[in-house]
Amino acid sequence: MAYFPEDRPLPKRLKKEPLIQAVFEMRFSGTVPASEIFPGFLFGKREDKNDKTLIESLPAAQVPKQLRDMDPNLQFVPVIRLIWKKYIISISDRSIVIGCDYPYPGWDKFKPIIIEIIGHLKESGIVASVSRYSMKYVDLIESADIAHQISLIDMKVSVAGQELKNQNFHIRIEFPVKDFINIVQIVPAASANLSNGEKREGVIIDVDTIYNINDQKIEDVINYGFDDGLEIIHKINKRMFFSCLTEETINSLEPVYG
Image 1 (cartoon, helix red, strand yellow):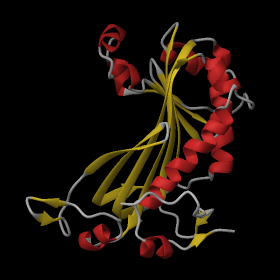
Image 2 (image 1 turned 90 degrees about the vertical axis):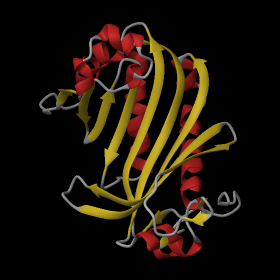
Image 3 (image 1 turned 90 degrees about the horizontal axis):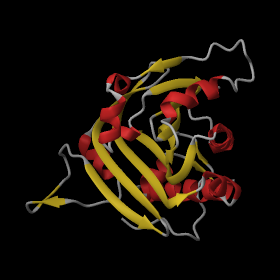
Image 4 (image 1 turned 120 degrees about the horizontal axis):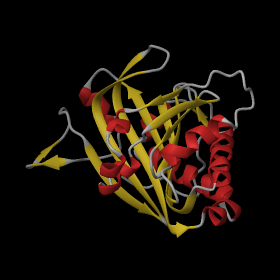
């Protein structure tokens, strides 16, 4: 797999859009668990007070807080979920996840929502420092045949002397790019149920781009380069996705460059 060249223009959009999920996550430490304070704070920031914003507890809420504090993994498992302007906000004790399902509204609409929510997080006063933030995009390219699904990806994998061409597998690889880590997962023979009731089958390409920022104050993160940081992480993620595809696959998705 060769990384998509920096001097090669990225498609502005794909006419045959394979994207099924987009997620932004920020992890932090704070004075109190975010799951206890921030849902109510965010609820109070609604522009339309008549909007019936859904707030629901998730299974992790049944785990006692003392146990969540003891297990580092549980500190980032969402406890509360709510809907904000059709976006899904999931809140754990030490993280916030902003997601949107199919159909993806586009980066021009998703980015301002991220900036708005993180601005409210800063205003709440519960975050002491930020350890990382990340962008994750999940794409599913449709195909009914496993061998064809594998051929869509720019990779060759051999196990025990045999190249994987017609087998089920789940590959997870880490690719460092500049100050970021791309975690790429490729899963053929996958299926997804979309929010509109549609079911798709094919190969999933899941790219999670992480920026570790070593416990900076949230004020510094937002005031010094957060907007540019979002643009950079978005472009790195996008280049990583196209790096996973063959030239034939890219063309089949009908890229638009203008």
